[in-house]
Length: 175
Image 1 (spheres, rainbow, N blue to C red):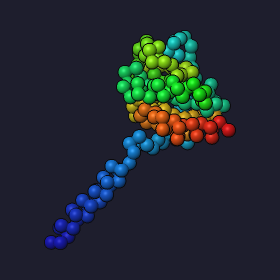
Image 2 (image 1 turned 60 degrees about the horizontal axis):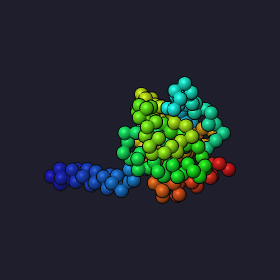
Image 3 (image 1 turned 90 degrees about the vertical axis):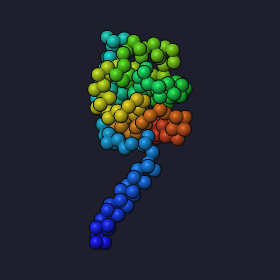
Image 4 (image 1 turned 60 degrees about the vertical axis):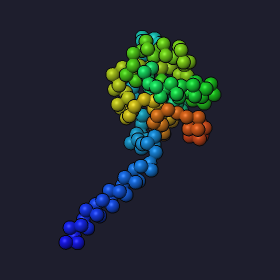
């Protein structure tokens, strides 16, 4: 009779421990299986000049950021002024990946909000985003000189993350 009540009680306690641990985790720090691995290669069209293409391979030898954004993304609006200010420091080029968005909408949005990107490319069908493991926009990747993903920020970049995470990592990788 005691065993009949002990098994559900143990299962309940075990489940409670897992739930408690999960609730204490930061949802923006979802581990990425790509950190420490080669960034997926891609060739996409520039949103400002569709006849011009950009290849991620051209960034080899440079530390750079890949910022996934879209004109329809509300959180992208929150981080955008910070990216504009960050780009002025010229610590690393920022490549914009316009995710599942019309290039003309992205161009209008960048004209209105300011353009922090060295270049912005169009990922209309989202295939590049899928290869990078994009959960949603915005997301930002730090890629080193060898083309290895060193960090991933899910959600909008904050000033604290720029100061505490991005700038020190970029400086370290640039040496």
